Amino acid sequence: AVFCEWPLGATLAEAQEILSIRVPRNFDCSDPGRLLKERAKALGIEAPFLGLMTAIPSLERVKVSTEREGGLVATAIATVGISNASTPGFAGVHDCRPGTVNLVVLLDAHLEKGAMVRAATLAAEAKALAFFQAGIIGKEGLPATGTSTDVEVVGCTGRGPSLCYAGPVTQVGHLLAKAVYRAVSEGLKEETK
Image 1: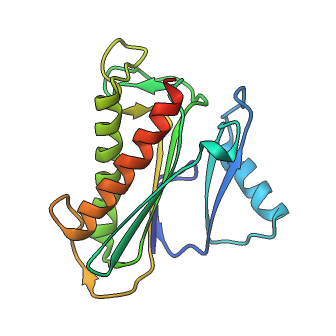
Image 2: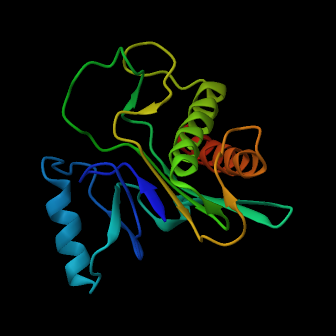
C-alpha cells in the first residue's frame, strides 16, 4: 500500500510503480499530472503509479538513509531543494515553483490505512525538524518547514504484523523519522554550501 500527496490529488492506494522525473528549474507547473502521465506512458508504466518531479541537477543529489531495528526497515529517499522554502500560514497563495523536497519512505512493514496517514505526517514533521535545525528561512523571513510544493510518499510491503499506528514513539515511527531526518539533513547541507 502507498499513501501519497501528489499533483493528481492525495491518495491511499495500491501502486506498483513510483516515478520520479527531472524537470528544468524554469518548468511550467501548471499541469504536472499531464507530464507525469505522458512520461509514464513513454516508459511503459501503467496505472497504478505515483509520480514526483524534481529539478535536482544530478542523481548524486539524491539522499538515501536506512534504519533497521527488530525486523523493521525504514528507508527514506529524498531530493532536497530550498529555493522555494516557505512558512505555512505565512507564505500566501501563489503558483507552484520548482525548488522542492520530494520524500519517498519505504517501510518493510504492514501498516493499516490510518498508520499510513500518520507515517506521512511524521515524515513531514521530521523534514520540518531538519529545516528548523538547519536554520532555513522562508521568503517570509520566518523559519521554513519545507517548501510550498513538497511531496511525501509512504509505501509499505505489507509484511509482518499489522500496525495500526505509526507515531514517533512506535518502533516503525521512530525508524521512519530517523531515516527522513538524516536524508533531508544531508540534502540541506548540500543546498546550503
